[in-house]
Image (cartoon, rainbow, N blue to C red; front, side, top):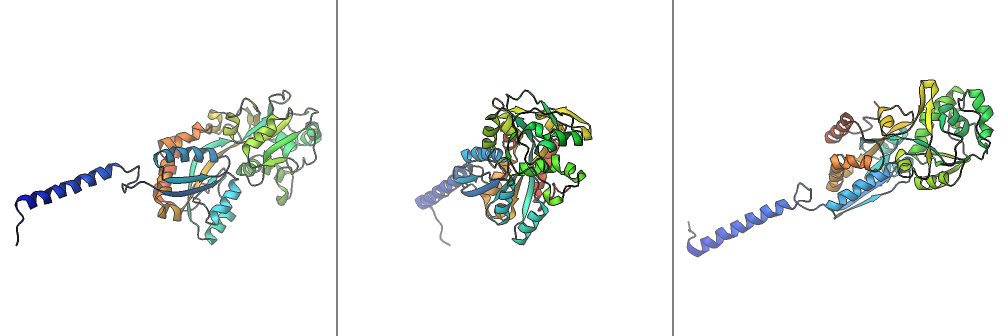
Length: 350
């Protein structure tokens, strides 16, 4: 055996030391990536315009520490988002309603499996103009008379008086002023949730055919919540609805109406953090993100982004953009569901 001595030995030892030092230094610059390499790649997010502000803020925060990752966030509506997601075109789908059974089937047919994660709470806020001093509270019965499937053609608030009186709505008579409605369109989860929570039960009681259970079709519909805010603020006798955050961020130009549901014993209730969180506000709903399994299994940037989203700073974004935080136990359920990789609509179908 040949022995290495003298200068060659010192050079060899020096080389080993430099390798070890370089490896140790390299392990410190991990940018949040367990492998010690800077994250890169692209994340495509689409869906609910309601959830879009949360995902956009978290994308901004995440990219500030991971500049190599490009994140696109779009908000065409929950239904349009699920269509893209179930076609395999996006990594994450934002949603202001749970995924529907038929959407689950389309995903399955296309080989798209996913994890469902609840991230926050919203209260659909019914709005009018600050100039409208005639209306302060509306009941579900009032909302049906003004906005439901039997109110098509009502050009004035007062046109709904007969229908509202027949139903026993508590806030008649309505003022004899133009009824100018601006609200979400059919592609929006906010539209679907409004129908499900407010209109559907009353329509069934009145034996409206299932295919006709919807809002009145004759109003200005938009998938852009900012357009809705502009429409409501621009008419002194307007009516419409948006997610709570869009009211919070525009409370200087629109007025939120209190909502009651006397049939369920709910008096006129203001939408605020406390009433939405407690469920006292009668038009509250959960907010979701859906993560494609193929994406989080094969794209480290997606897994890292969702980890961030469900961390302390990520959950903070919910309240920062104007929505209501989950209770701590519900946050833990979401985190546990993500860590376990539970596939399918686990929470929403309980």
